[in-house]
Length: 261
Image 1 (cartoon, rainbow, N blue to C red):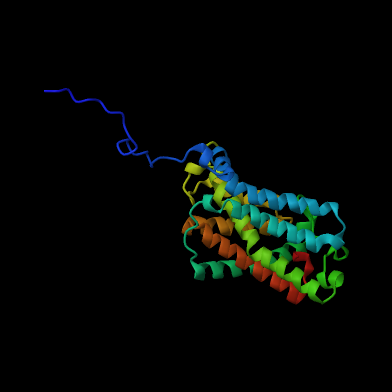
Image 2 (spheres, rainbow, N blue to C red; image 1 turned 45 degrees about the vertical axis):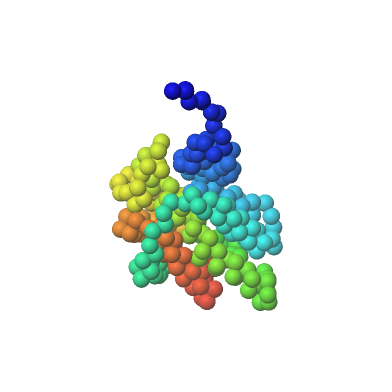
């Protein structure tokens, strides 16, 4: 019986290439490679961009504030959207709860601060800053008039506070910091909404570093953290946070209470 000759594989007989497994490094975008090396980037980069652009405003005259605020808002949004596919699961919106809690926090922000300021408790400490004086208020209709520039600024200012700010802050504080304070080395393995007393208290107190009205900043973060532990949904917190900011800034514009601006 003749021995069967060994034939070299042709393109019809070659084994099919593997299609499973992670894509080759060279086929991944620079965003994918960055996130693989730094898993915190999608949660931290938008917030850091927002803070950096806010610090930039201090280098310019107040007349440039509208354009610099627009740069801060859209710059942070651009960076956030760059990482959109790498965000953690956002969860459900829980709209009725988000609306109720958002409005309650907005009311509390004004009411509690007025109590602190009225009794002198806030200005007496001055540990983390104090209210601006009326001479330091940025009053948009005095700076821009009441024409198109004024209304465009209000749209960006109020709209940005109700949409972009909640996205970048919730990704950072609830998506990153709360988990980082549980496992410093592998925060991404910590489930969203996991509770520990240390992370709850430390994150709430740390909010005072961002908010000059530190007493209501801490109370606001306590409420937001508790809501996050309950619903375990970043989207719910983004909507809640957005409603708080929207209600607060609408109040400021209607009642001309510029200390909260």
